Amino acid sequence: MKLLILIALLFSSVVVYASHENEGEMNKIRADLVTRLDENRTNTIAVLRQKIQTGSPLEKDAALFVVEEKLVLELVPCVLVAISDRTQAPMYHDTGWTYIGRHAGWVILKFIRKLDRDWLQEQKFKRSLMAICNDDDREALKSLWTKWWKQYQEKQEPQQIGAR
Image (tube, rainbow, N blue to C red; front, side, top):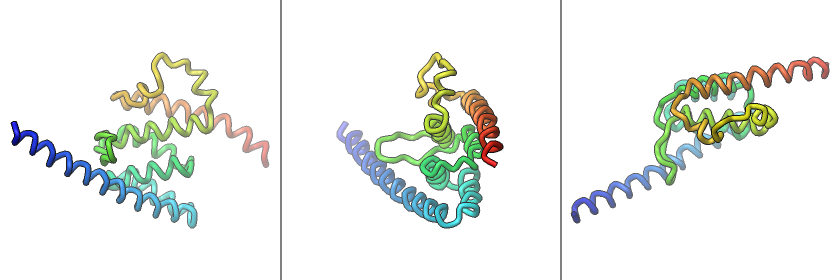
């Protein structure tokens, strides 16, 4: 019994250390990407896209945080694709292990909340948004958020034409 407790304590110490290390590294990557985005948006959007598609788990996660924080709408199609990404996400503090696709789904939800709250109210969901975003049926969520993105773009086009 004592051996089991000792193993559990050792394992939890390693996990806590790893989670702090992960968070520190992710924050460095995120800060660098934010600075680069502020200095050269066009080139950094390409870098963000690459990191979301093929980066390490830390890079993918950091890029998604930047896309959300800086409201990088140019990358919504890329984030929609990432909803299907089953790459295991890094662990931070007590968040537990999850995957990149779940983070991507939450990024889109946050965009909708910032840009188009009426759309959410019109949907009359039978489940909570938390349950919808955390559901393992990633394709259903991707389809739902893609529907929002298309409708949102259609609403924006008349405004852009009127602004000319």
